[in-house]
Every structure is written in structure tokens, then in C-alpha cells.
Length: 195
Image 1: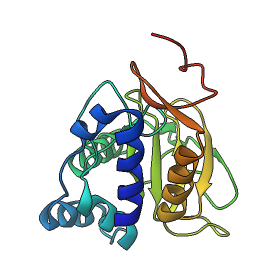
Image 2: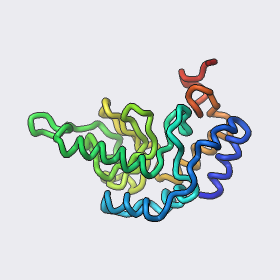
Image 3: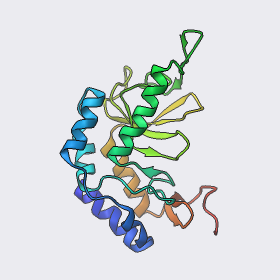
Image 4: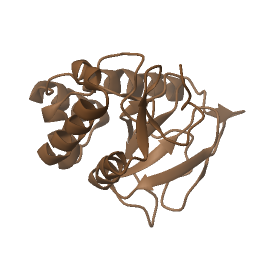
């Protein structure tokens, strides 16, 4: 994980040095343990190693992951708890029937699952998540996209490390740029305009 952070920080240093100032220092073991106790299972080793170096980013206008915030562990817990509260309140059912999603093969058709751990946020209830409870043909620890108002659930990568490796490689290939208003965004996004 150190290698990925070195490469990511080098990209920031070259393209947008001020982004380095919004990185948190590494997370403590106690905070990681509190999340694992909350969800009732261990997080992937690569995910924990990543967060041991930088505990996500400060809440800022600029996002580090295609305009989205890279959540701190504390914010992951907060976002997870928000979704859990919605589930416990019955907000993902209609007349006592579960509201089902339309996922890619390998993802359960839940609207939300307590073992989907959000690690990015766009501020509107949409996330990339670590999926620790995949459907048959899925992989524990795969990265999935979760939309609060759309039932599609997509597999973005087979693991957190595979997702991170692809994202850093895409940064280095010029697929992403820095836009002052949004942070790191894909070069072809509608967010890529002069501000």
C-alpha cells in the first residue's frame, strides 16, 4: 500500500500540491477495530494497510476519487450507521416486501447490505463500497458502486487493491485531471470545465 500512496502523492505534488494538505495521517488500530466490531467481521488486510498510511481526506470541496471524498474511517462509520438506521427503520421495504436492486452478477440484490462498507462519498448518498457479502460468482472484498436512488449495483473491481492499482495507473496515464472546484476528476467528465 505504501507504493500506491507514494505514487498518488507524487501525482498530487505534480498536478495539485494543495491536495496533499487535506490528507489525514494514518488511522489508529482502535478506530479500525471499532469499525470491525460494528460490522461483525474483519476488513481486508489491504484496506487496513491503506488506511494505516492515510486515514482518508479532510472534508473539503475537492474530492480525491473522481470528485468524491475519500472517507476517513470515522466518516465510514458515520455513513455506514446512516444506512443501517435506514435499514432498521424499514425504509428499504414497500408494504413489508424488500425493495430489490438490479445488481451485476456477483452482487446480492439488496438495496443495501450491512456488509457493504462505503469508502467514498459524493455527498448525496452515493458510494464506492467494499462488498464483504457477495452473491455467488462474486468475490469477498470486491469494490461495488452504490446509488441511493438507483437500483443498479456494479462491480468496479475484484478487490480493493485491484481498484486502487487501476485508479493510480489511470491517474498516471492522464485519465484524470485536477479541477479546482471538484478535485480529481476524469478528463472526460462534465465536471471538467474552466472555473
